Picture 1 (cartoon, rainbow, N blue to C red):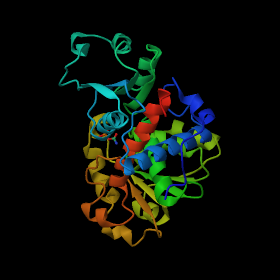
Picture 2 (picture 1 turned 180 degrees about the horizontal axis):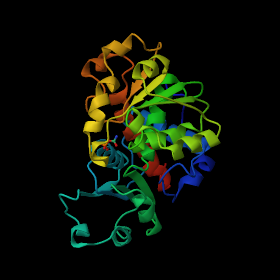
Picture 3 (picture 1 turned 180 degrees about the vertical axis):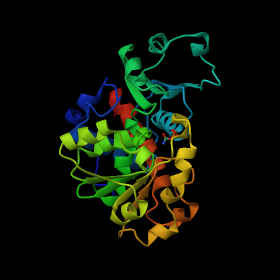
Picture 4 (picture 1 turned 60 degrees about the vertical axis):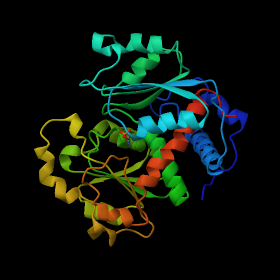
Amino acid sequence: MSPFSGKPSPAGLAPFAGRDLLDFSWIGKEELRVIMQTAAYYEEALKEKKRLYDMDGKLMASLFYEPSTRTRLSFEAAMHRLGGGVVTVAESSLFQISSTAKGEKLPDTVKVIEGYVDILVCRSPEVGSAAQAAEHTLIPVINAGDGVGEHPTQALLDIYTIIKEKGGVDGLTIVLAGDLKNGRTVHSLADALSLYDCRLLFCSPAQFGMPAAVINKLKGRGVRVEECCSLDEAAARADVLYMTRVQGERFEGREEFVKTEEAFILTNRHMGRFRPGALIMHPLPRLNEIAPEVDSYPGAAYFRQAANGLFVRMALLALLTGSVK
Ligand code: CP
């Protein structure tokens, strides 16, 4: 049951038009509330089978230099659901189709894209790439993941999911588990959760701990943060258990993790330890860190979570282009 109804007021919408979303630097509690309300408004509209034209005549560019299933397809679906159009570059260093292959640099690429579209969604393996894109274009830029840096739209759909499933975030114990060093989703999510009155428990093998810079920032804001390296302990304490995969693409020497891997696989064995109503989340894709047997647990929300990405990304596209009708 969504705690939101209707559409945000013009005053609520105003701070978004023309902005970039690179991280949570300008997102406060009120901005989060407006994003959640707008997402719920679009979810309701789609549930009622309404045809939306909020972005009629507008175009979005997807510029993806890293693989993606959920982020790119949900952004593109969001644009279509809002009546807008999409142009796409989806490539990797092994398969290049854009003029990046000829040596064109990101600043020139985005200056050119600016002439074609109204908003740019950008993913790259380089930390800071979305910020660099934003520096060189006047259209809004959304960071769809920059290396091990940030993935703010994932964090927003994560929070939307927690609110939908648990009724709110305040008062919860939220465990972020797995490869917290290299996982950009958990960096953004920890930042966003610091706006709420919740407890954070970081659970990882020692070599994959949350970066000190993230922990220090959270503590500086007065967030209650603990660390542990036992998934059994974390599973027993969590209201929300947010699992992540080993980010194998970010480092060499995967064997290092394989030694500890077994201890970080969530299985039926953990279910008996869960608190009543505990929610299991995962940004996906998963490898083996959640056994398929867990999927039938009612609190296993990861596929519902992925579906929520559509509504949240509709909200972001419409808000940042000033198109919420
Ligand atoms: N969660 C997420 O970012 O998934 P994709 O890499 O498939 O976009």
